[in-house]
Image 1: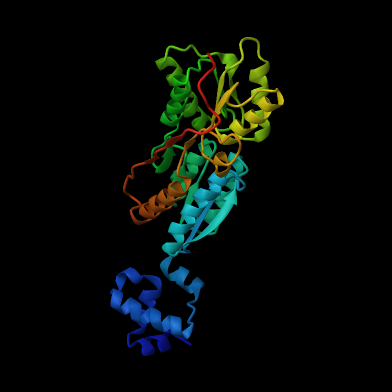
Image 2: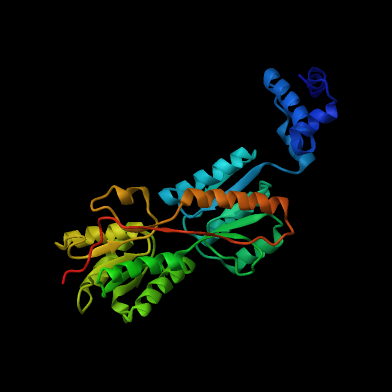
Length: 335
């Protein structure tokens, strides 16, 4: 069946059928409904390649995440997919494996595939990122990172206040020796905000930070275990509480503490940040900072669509709020 046949059955011109397929916003809702009904009844499938040549759009969006197997990223991808599918777009998903160079390689792949836009979750922004942002001409949105050049809009998490709130909660429980397990070497931007939130809380309550209680590494469970070991074996009094920059690090810290014969939270309170699905189901359930990662994916996709519609307009960054979840892994310090 040809487009002429669809036009005849719908009682419209061939040009109207073409506009319904390629640019439905240019056609009245009544005509769109009439033509789409005929398309559905006849099973007509338009030539996608021809449509791309006409519209110069592939309806593909490239998405790069650091890792696939972490549920926070999975939730964000679900939110992105929901919005983009509703708007007629499909995803090309890639994982950078936490390597900026790998992310840049995928940027180039996406450019060659002629995607209509890119959503990226960078762990580190290099000068080559800035060059790509400036020269590609592609609509872009960053998640959890701020573009130093100020040209690419971002969806950000309130890491500073979320961390400060949690550490102040631990201080209110009477803890003064609070360890910090960070991810500075792995993601300096995220760790900087969380570390500064930690230090701000201590400062507000007149508690001097101790370098021996502060570590930095990556997001892995192995690192969290080693970091807790390093803190625990350092000279000086043991910490009575631990704030970990992610739930994964917090869970690894709990494992190490248990192996040392410590009870959580009776001997050491432990808190994290992320509110992974498992956080509420482990024993003890993990006190943590909750982010709505699904919503952040929705916001990122909607921001990208807005950027695609208004390429010259300067768009505001979006800040995702947080909730403190008080659960079983924290309690008041023993007197």
